[in-house]
Length: 239
Image (tube, rainbow, N blue to C red; front, top):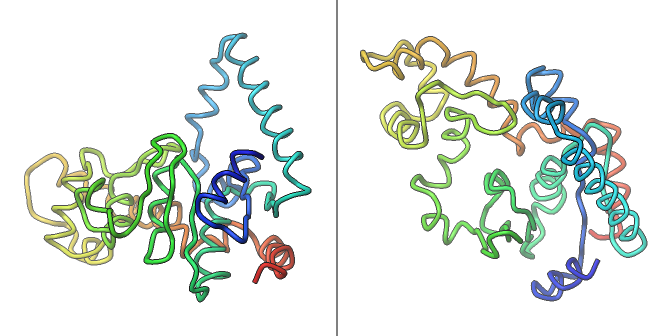
C-alpha cells in the first residue's frame, strides 16, 4: 500500500488502477497448450523449502491485494493476466486521454505497450523506460520490437525460430520487412542453419506467436467479453 502511494505521489497520479494476474491466461493456454508449461515443471520439482516459500509469497500477495481493495481500483479475473488488462486500459479505455500513463512493472515485455503517452517504471531496476530513451536499452527501433519478439520467442515457453536471436531477427526484418513480408518471402535463400529453421518453422511459429505476444491486438480476446464489460463498469468513474 505504502509503495503504491509513494509511486503515485512521485508521478503525480490522480487515478490508480492495480492489475493482477489470476493464474495463467486461459486464452493462451487454449491457443498453445505448452504455454508456461516450463513453470509447471519448475513447481513440480520444487523442494519442500521452495514450496513453502512459494506458498507464503502468494499468501502475502493475496493479503496485500485484499488490503488495497478499499483504496484502489483492482482488476483481477480468473484466467486473465495483468498485462492484457494494462494493454486494454492503455490502448482502448484511455487511448484518447491526454495524460501520461505509467505502467509500474519489472516485466520487460510491458515495453511493447510503450508509446508517446505510455511509459514504464521498473521497481527492480529503478529505471524509467520510454519511447524517448528506447535506444538506451534496445538495439532495434520500437516499431520493430513486437516483430523481433515474435521471431525470437522467449519466456513462458513461447518458442521462436531456433537460432534466431534479437540481432538476427533485426537483420531479417531489415532485409524482408515485417513478419508478414517475411512469411510472404518464404522460403528465403541461404544455407545457414537458422535460415533453414526460418523456412521450416517460420510460418507456423510466427502466426502462433503473434497471437500469444501481441497484447495490444489480442488483449480483448484474452480478457474475454464479460470481463471487458466488467472492467468498463469498474473504471467508468475514472474516465
